[in-house]
Amino acid sequence: MVRTPVPEEDEKFKKLIDMAKQEGESLGGVFEVFALGVPPGLGSYVQWDRRIDGRVAQAFMSIQAIKGVEIGEGFKLAGRFGSQAHDEIFWEKGRGFYHRTNRAGGVEGGMTNGEPVIVRAAMKPIPTLMRKKSLHSVNIKTKQPFDAAKERSDVTAVPAAAVVGEAMLSIVLADALLEKFGNDNWDEIKARIEEYRRYVKEF
Figure 1: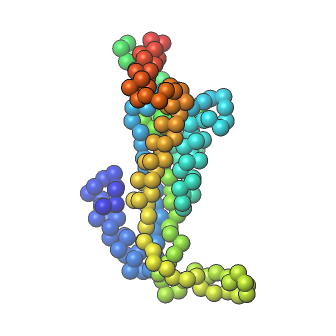
Figure 2: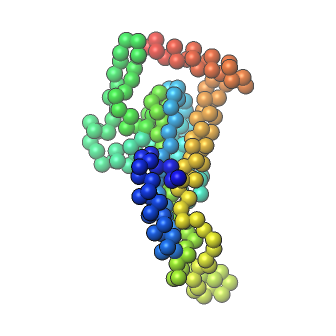
Figure 3: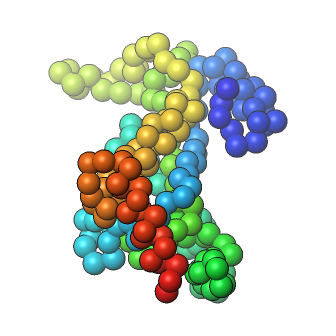
């Protein structure tokens, strides 16, 4: 199982992995994780080190071989006009404030906005290759060139990295949740969250 969001595409990815293995190559890729039911207001819009997007990015960049992180539509937004990039705000009686889109990935101004938090991470290919011709390297002592050593290696670690990403996002959000609602008793924390949700809907 390669954990694709479209299960019927699994075979396509498996064939690509098998082909790369035969060629002695490795593969990278992009994985996506998300969190539902996140209350609005986690993080900070005034303190740089408490911004939820900064904390999420730091957590994901700490995973081995991750070279890029985006929240929501991330890099795509850079190529759009403002009218195409932002999530419009609406209000409805009984529902309160809401968005019809989630391009921001559940984070605005350094804080969660109540929408699903969506994070994507780009993982580079594993550096150990099993090809006949390895990558060039240099001996540290002699400074002479030599081919990098071949070691046992998986073809790709992207599916496994997605599991780690889920854990990292959970840790960051749980930490921010405890900062906002405190306490060491889960029942009392849940009660505070529900009270907060009712309070927010009254605006």
